[in-house]
Length: 351
Ligand SMILES: *Cc1c(COP(=O)(O)O)cnc(C)c1O
Image (cartoon, rainbow, N blue to C red; front, side):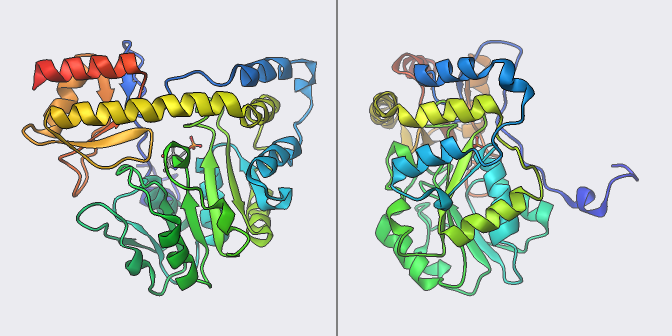
């Protein structure tokens, strides 16, 4: 508290990121980072970018990266927006497209940055309860609103909607922007990018942090109809005209072009997720069906918070949310096979 703070600052509800402890080495299964390194081509490109040209500002439009993303998804470059992390892209989206008189709808259990942006930008929100099985209640998004946002697959449930269900939401809301946060889509859901040509109200955000192993680089992007992208550009150019540095543009561009490496690491994570889910099921966990690089797991015979603390003492970090409806669950990131074997071993000692 300080008398120098603005009223808005007093009222903020800041996001709390997962722990990044520096005290000891943990098996980190708490922030959905990728256990595999980025594409070697991305690392080479970043090294090459760290040269004397760093004295110059980067390309404010990051045209090479937009082109690579447009090529990957068969879009035009004017349908692509890039930013310094998808959190930043989301922040611009809240200002550009989701701040209206009617309330913004999002699931009650979802990415906890959405309420933080609402408090930062003074947006009126109406959280929509997930169904009891933690799926998104599609019909509840057919009511008056000033915008809609949800992750697909949702976090921390990991459960995905089908493109059919997404189309129902898009069709019912022709006058609202419908934002789909596809941070985890590569791990098992269908991207809604093919719907962009039919739905001018659809905006999709993605990130290089999860499926492309570049959480440290901070690169995210959005895709949608040109008018929506222009709205984002207006906000971005009123905030920071050079959000992506030279190394980030080079690394992200090389990463998205290296499709073979991407598929290889993504497939390993999906395989490990399926094996881990089966093993956790046998150990007495209820596992929600995950299309992401994490599982949402409920220990049926133990207290989730206690288990989180015991795992931490044993060098394994998972995420526990002390939030309504999900206090009985742990969110466990999928690491390598070796890391998951250690998790399972520690659990079998503790349970
Ligand atoms: C990780 C995550 C993001 C943020 O990604 P960054 O690009 O690292 O900021 C956005 N949305 C969801 C649902 C996420 O889990």
